[in-house]
Length: 330
Ligand code: SF4
Image (cartoon, rainbow, N blue to C red):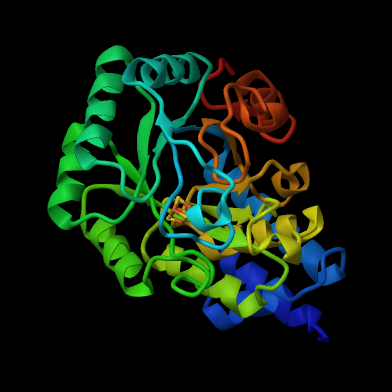
């Protein structure tokens, strides 16, 4: 596809000036080949927006609390029971979760995310937030990443101490996932009307997804007023149906991050990339993930940090691209 550089420059300038990009415009930007003059224009604008709006690097710490086969059988997830990767079931105790949360908070996490599989009991989810708030003075922003919930349950989550929900209309939701698109949209609308902030990455993105599909999810997140956006590239976990399709290159991920930053504009200050990709930090991402426990991108439960990325390393890496990192002295 040939790209009109002048048009891309106009779109980038518009985003810098606060204009909300449409799906069609974001599709044009995503279709620009990484490394092309048009892509360089997009990355430069994204970096400028990142320094203007995010201004600092932030670490998203995540604790996967239950390791068990999930009947939803999403085609990219190691927990899908049909794939036979996760056979036993166990979950972290409240004490273990609180200890991990305290450690993440002490090391400067800006967000602590509690992640569960689809059917983890809401009462337990709420109990975790209450315990973390009680144990951690000045507790970082608590994020819940769980299954579907109602408006009343959103209020319960907020009252328990969560201030943000990570919830996503996944790529090809209802086709590649075991959850209906309608149910997923219903929860997203619940969050939009609730006191919970929304975090919504375009994910899990693989090489088969078109620019239009990716742009649609970016604009959906922005129009739901997500305060954290970004891109999660699919990790091809051996044994899952999507694994043979492979993964995006680091350049493709970074380019999608740059477009995500321009789509987010002034709506979402934080643009997150996961898994870690330093090119993406040059292209406008300011948040990276340190995670432990049950990780749907791996065949094993993670006792320490996924792929060995520690809080210290995350801070050091973010510090290469941002003058300050949240949770550390300037
Ligand atoms: S992505 Fe979530 S809902 Fe889908 S199989 Fe994995 S744990 Fe279950």
